[in-house]
Structure formats: structure tokens, C-alpha cells
Amino acid sequence: MKNSALLQLGSWGCLRIMVMRVYLSLLACILLVLLPVPVFSGCTCQPFGATQPYFVDTVPHSEGGVIILWSEPREGKLRAQRLDSQGRAMWGNGHPVALFNKPNHIVGWSMLTNYVDEAVAVWDIRPSGDKHYKLYAQRLDGGGNLYWGTDGIRVSDATDSQERPILVNDDSGGVIVVWESLRYASDGQILEKNGLRAQRINSSGERLWTEFGIPVSTQSIISDSSGGLIGVASDGAKSIFCERIDKDGGTLWRVWVTNVADDMEVSYPNLISDNDGGAIIGWLRSTKGTDFRDWAYCLQRVDPNGKLLWQEVTIDEMSHEQDRPLMVPDSLEGVILLRDYGKQAIRIDAAGKIQWSVPIPVAATSYPVHPIQLSAARDSTDILLAWRVAGRIPTEGGEIHVQKLDSYGRFLWGTEGIPVFSPETFKTQTTPLIISDGSGGAIIVALLGRGSHGADSIQAQRIDSDGNLLWGEDGIKLKP
Image (cartoon, rainbow, N blue to C red; front, side):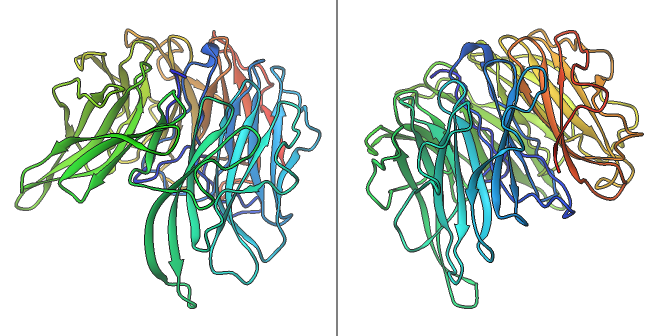
């Protein structure tokens, strides 16, 4: 599956919509979109530097619609809804994906598409009276039917806490899940960190890598297109390594991507698919100064056999630690970097050469000290961008815009993009998610509020290839 990719935030990464704790309380999640059909060739991506802690997830539907997953802690449910290409709700008020009774506590999930119009969701839940979280998985089809029982299946039988799940496609209808293993003391403090573990689950819901999963070293992962995974991680602050795990859970190779001098440090390793069986790896490098640090973003490409293909690519003049670009695969085995703080797009080709660098034309109301909180997706040839223009107070107000960027670095939807939701109607607009609609347009999902101090509904909007809003002036309301 050439188009699979995972884009990560910090050391774990996320694709997510954020909102303050309000009437609709949405709990922490991590989103991955893996798209096996060329019409959606790409992945949705999440901005770096965002601070609000509640989220909702989306995956595309082949008929031009979207599947949306959110949590309802007050009702004790994870719920999913499918909107068709016209914005019609296809699953009534939404199908429950997981049920849990208070005081059970659900803290995170991941979701991906594994076949056309199917999705797999993974979540962690803390049963009543237990200090440790347990991982569950569920598969649902385009009709909202659940394949793996009413409650889903346990990902691991281990007694330790299983947290922060991420997952990738195994290219056979199943998934590979990676999570962090912890043990807690009776007072809730972390007693022991047991590293990372992984489990492969086939399309029937059977666990293939022992009942406890296998130990792994990398928490930023993509599919290797052969039933296994490619992952990247840092070894302390001085080096980055990449490894490939095969479909049976064995390590095929491990390669050191970079080692830095004593006055340097590396952090935040991440990777995406190169659309040719390998990966493009990015990380932040800092050089210690007397009273400051110099920041740079570095990249390398590795082939399916673990061979490094590039001279290390360096993007200098990063403003600070939070200025970490979002990596989006292009259609030619290269990468496009999107910088929130720098408000800049950079294309690097398959040979590791910088082809162009262009400023992202954000609205004039965006205050220079605030990131624009980018989200992105790729259709067959272009990059779709969505961002929240921050108000004077970053956590209040805001306005969502969308833009299309072609392979030559040209912006196609006006000088400042297209506003998606009216700021007069929705005085609170949080960081958006964006996916391709498969026809040159985009679907945007965001948490919005009619007041200025919090979001209280999930809204979706579709924009066609010419930049026209298709789902009414205010979009489609999902919840409440």
C-alpha cells in the first residue's frame, strides 16, 4: 500500500481537533488515516504546537463523504457517523463504537481505514477499580456494522497499563497497534515504564503477535506495505535510528539515521511513507549557544532495505522548538514541509533537493506571534490546507480558512484562502481537520461554538475543486 503515512505530534503525534472542556467534552485521541485507494492518495495531517486537549477523528469515504468518530463521556460512548457526499447523515444519530460505564475512564483512541469504506478504531479504557488502562479494538464497515463483537477485542492480555495507541494498516485487512506499557503505584504515580509493545490483528480480530504483543523500539510508525512496519525513534539526545519489523514480528533491519556532535541534540523524530516502500524521516536538531539555541529541521530518506538515500537535508532558521514542520507526502516520492510558525511551504524532491519554498498566504488578522495551526491532506496531485487564524487571545475566537497548493508551489484558492465558517455565526472556531473528497475538493471538520469562550458542536463542511461551499453556509452539525 504505497500511500500509507503517519504524521505525528511531538514524540507520539496526533491528528486531531481541539476544544476547551465544555458541554461537549471530547477526549484525547490520536488519528491516523491510511488510504489504499488512489483517489484519496495521501493522509490527513495535524498541526504542531496546538495546546487544547480534546479531540475528534475523521477518515474519508470513497463516495466523497466522511466517517467521523467522537467520544461522549457523559453518555459513556464512542460514537461514529458517516456523512455522504451531500452531507446527509447515513447512520441516524450515529452508531456506538464502544460503550463504557462510569467510572470507567477512556483516554485515547486511533482510527484508520483498512479497506474501502471500512475503519478500525483502537481505544484505551480504565475499568472501574483498576489503576491500569486496557486496549480494545473494533472494526466497522461502511454501514456502521461492528465486526469484532459488541465490546470489541482486547489488544493485549497484559496486566500493565496500555496507553497512547497508534496503528497502521497491515495490508491484509488488519492492523498493527503500538502502545506504551506502564505500571502505576496505588497513589497513581508511575511506578515503572516498560517501553513500547506492538500487536498485529487480522481482519477476523485474531491477535497474531502473542497474547501480550511484542516489544518494539519505535513509536512513530508507518506500514511497510508487506504486513509489517517501519518505525523511527531517538536513542537519547544524540542519535536517531530507523527499523523495519516484518509481518511475523521479526526485526528485518535497524539503521542509524544520524549521530550529532557534543554541542548538538536531536529530538522529535517522525516519518512518512515515500510512496515507494521506504520512508522519509524528519527530526529537530538544536545547537547549544551561550544564551540561546540554534534550531534546524533535518530530513533523510531510507529505502525498503534500510539503505540511506540522501545527503542529510537541513532546513535552517527555525524560530524555536515548537517550529517543527508538518510533513506531507507529495505525489513523486518526495515531501512537502508545512511550517506553522514560519507560515511557509517547502518542497523536497525524491532526490533530497529543495525545489521551492513559498510563504503561506494567511489572512491579515493572524497575529505574528501565534502559529496558524495547520492541518493538511493530499489528493491525487495537490495539497489541501486548512488552518485556524488565531485571534488576539490564541484560545478564543479564531477563523478557519482553506487553501489548495499545487506541485509547483502555487496557491489556487485566492490570496488568503477561503473562509469555511462565518465568524459572526461561530465566534469560537478550533483547529480544523481536513481530508480530500476524492474530486479535487475537501471536507473540513471542526469543533465550533456560537459563543466566544468555548466550542459546543461538531460541524462539517465540504468545498468543491473550485472553492465553493457545498453543505450550506454553516455546514452540517453532527453533535449535539
